[in-house]
Every structure is written in C-alpha cells, then in structure tokens.
Amino acid sequence: MASETRRTGHQVTFVVLAASVTAYALLQSLVTPVLPTIQQALHTSQNTVTWVLTAYLLSASIFTPIMGRIGDMVGKRPVFVATLAALAAGSLLAALATNVTVMIIARVVQGIGGGVLPLAFGIVRDEFPREKLSGAVGAIASLVAVGGGLGIVLAGPIVNALDYHWLFWLPMIVTILAAVATFLFVPQSPVRTPGRISWSPAVLLSAWLVALLVALSQAPVWGWGSGKVIGLFAAAVVLAVAWVETERRAATPLIDMKMMARPAVWTNNTVALLFGVGMYAVFAFLPEFVQTPKSTGYGFGVSVTQSGLILAPMAVMMFLVGMGANGLAARIGGKIVVLLGALIGAASMALLAFAHTHTWELYIATAVMGVGFGLAFAAMSSLIVAAVPPAQTGVASGMNANIRTIGGSIGAALMASVVTAHPAADGLPRESGYTGGFAMLGGALLVAALAAVLIPVSRRGNVVSVEGAEDEAAAAESGAGQELAAVPAGNVEGDASH
Image 1 (spheres, rainbow, N blue to C red):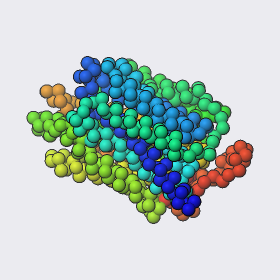
Image 2: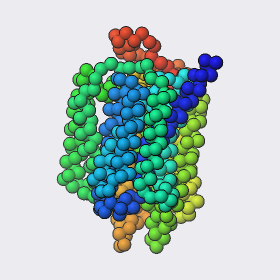
Image 3: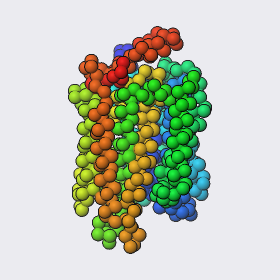
Image 4: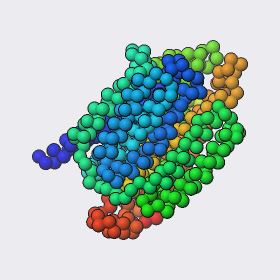
C-alpha cells in the first residue's frame, strides 16, 4: 500500500513538473510566427519588435542558473513556486501590454521562468527512485523541445480564433494552476547546499551573456564588422574570463567550475550548444521559408497556421522518441544515443537544404529532425544529472539548458546573416540563402556528433557514478553522511578522471 502511494505521488509530481516546463517552453516560441502581428498592434518597428524575443532569451539565460542555485540552497519547491509566479506575472503583464516597452519588460519578467528547468530536474533527482529517474528526466527534457515546437504550431490557430493576447493568457492560466498544484502536491526536496549567492559572479555572468547575446542578435542589423558588434564581442570575452576567475575564487560559487570541467559535463554541454544552434534556427526560419510568396520560385506562400503545421511532426516525434530514449540508452549506452541523435539531426538538415520543392519533403525532414533531437535531448539530460552530485543537479542541468539557449541565439544570428546576405531585387532572400543556411546547421550537428564521440565511456557497465575523493570529502565535511548517488543512464561515466 505504501509503495502504491509513493508511486501515485511520483506520477502527480511528474504531471505538475511537466505542465510547468511545457508552459515555459511554449512561451519560448509562441510569439515567433506572429511578430508581424504584434509589431502592427503595438505600432513599433521590425527591429524593435525583435526585442520581444531577445529580452526573453537574455532574461532566461541569466536567471536559469541563478534560480537553480537558490533552489539548491533554500529548497526547490518554494523556489519552483516563486518561479512559476514570476512566469505568470510576466504573462499577465504581456497580455495587458499596450506598447512595446511594457511588452519587453513583461518578457524580461517571464524569463525568470527559465528557473523551472534546473528546479524540475533537481526535484526529479531528489524524489524519484533510481529505476524511474532516467525516464522522468528524459521526458521532461523532451518536453522543453516539444513545447518549443508546439508553440509555433499553436500560434496561428490561437491568433485566428482569439487574438495574440491569448498567446499569454493561456500559458498564464496553466502556470497558475501548476504553481498551486506544486504547493499542494510536490514534496519538499531534502537536499540542500548551504551557502549564499555570490553576487559578483552573478553580475559578471549576466554582463557577459548580455554582451554576447546582444552582439549576436544585432549583428545582422548592425553588420558583423561594425564597431559596436566587435566591441560587444570583446567585452563578452573579457567579462567571461573575469566571471570564470571570480567563480573559481568564490567561497560559494554560482557555477562550480570543477563540476563544469567534468568530462561528462563539458562534452554534453558542447553537444547542447550545437543542438541549440540547429533547433532554434529552424524554429525561426523554417516558418519564414514556407511563408515566402510563390512568386519567388521557391516559397509556398502558406499562412502562419500552415507553416506551424509543417513543424508538427518534429514536435510529435521529439516527444515520442524522447519517452523511449533512456530505454535505448540502457541497452546501447547514452553516448551512442547522443551520437545517433546528432547524425540523424544532421541528415534532417540536409533534407531541408536540398529537398524542399514539395511540402511533403518538409514534413519528412521535420519528422526525421524530431527523432534526432528527441534522442539527443533525453539522453543528454540524463547524463548531466547522473554526472554530478545531487546538490549540484539544479545548477548543472540549468547550465545545460542555458547553453542550449545560447546556442540558439548563435544559430539564429548566423542563419539570419546567411539567409539575408544576398537578397533578390524585391528585397526577399534568395533560395540559395536558405539552402546555405540549412546546410550550415547540418554542419553544426556533424560537429555535435564529433563532440559526442568525446563523451567518456564507463569502465563499470551501465552505471554513471559521481563518486570521487573531492565529493566524498565535501560530504563528510558537511556532515551529510550520505552516499553520492549512482544512477543508470546508459554506459557513460560521469567523470572518467575519477
């Protein structure tokens, strides 16, 4: 009876976490295909309205690791509720916004919701039994990407049936319900990391991310060789170096650089960066490609709703494949699953680049892409969670998700530069721009496959261990008296150097 009660509790916890993560992921992409509508409604310019996306991206990049660290310190459930409350408040403000300034501020507030990712992974790590851990982590990781795809699919029907304000009302309603359910049903996680927030690293982290992402997002407008872009890139490098040094010297670092240097962590983060390059660029530019007028000779001239439907196979396959990815990892190893995902993703980009004459070709390409991304995202998340001590789960998984977001910024900026490099006489991109752009994204995923090859393989079979002299010493020093967990996640070791 007790075991049945625990099993039901785990199911309820998973549903609450899944709904929360899906609401956050939807807000990443719901506005992408309807930016022209928002631009017209708020009487602003095309360049300014892009900050509706950029502000959200910047804010999420900054708050994801910070909220994860706070959750590790004071408890994941209350911080998770607070994060959902911020996401709901930002959605309310966005729904009521009557000018672009208020809308951008609202999106900054929504970006605090990025904390749901490390906190959700941390709650799963603390509460779920080992045999259920990999599957739960993989499913939540898949929902992040699936929600992003569904956002583009659902945006058109929502705007047509209601109006663009409901792109914020609906996620707000889901988020409020999830916050209440979290408070009522999700147990308080017992794992704590005593300490405080080191604000110097937090400020430096924010500064270099802002400098980098502003440079990348504005480079297509300002020019890659402009003084402002070069200056921002230089500032990002200097600030990033200062951040790393400050983190290394901090008594309670925001990001543990020793953890980030673990072979299983840095290799998976590299893969995540490159997958982000591919995924977010497709989200941003495939709808634009198919909405291009037929008069260009390559466009399909479809509506916002129809362009979203072309991405539907990707979202469906990512979810279905992600649910079973960890079972496959248990048989052939997490490293192999990530490698397969990268290769399949690269193949899908090749299809987009060289076989886009008919819409059925695009449906096949996005379905194949969903298979590759679903495999990789689920396996990567399990490997990251398994590679670090429980106290660092929130920060490690949050940084992995954050690095994927940064990769998305890079991919979108690079894709914009390639696609718009040589416009036609009517100002629209040429077909060769899209062909070159999708081919470039395929190349990024091939590099991700090479990075996946570097993921360390366990010497002890299907177990990922986070044991090590430093971890044991830290546990003993804190009086925790508990073993660092070892969880099944394919045959990849958390740290081959241990």
